Image (cartoon, rainbow, N blue to C red):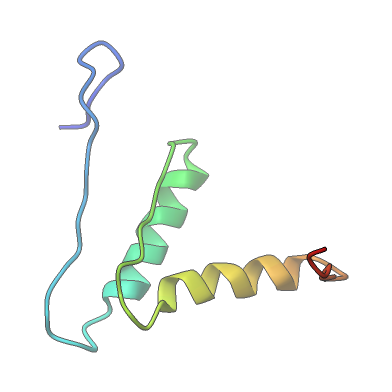
Length: 74
């Protein structure tokens, strides 16, 4: 059951296993994208040391921009 604003509950979905190569990152990305596209506030947390989920989002953000610039810290 999904929570409503009146209950104050926050629905949480977790995908975890110690076994590698079972599509955790792909499933997380697709579920997150789906819920966000439906207008739901969505937070995905990447705790994998390889940071694959983070890399997917950073690459898609860079590809969406025509120009990416960096600025040296002063």
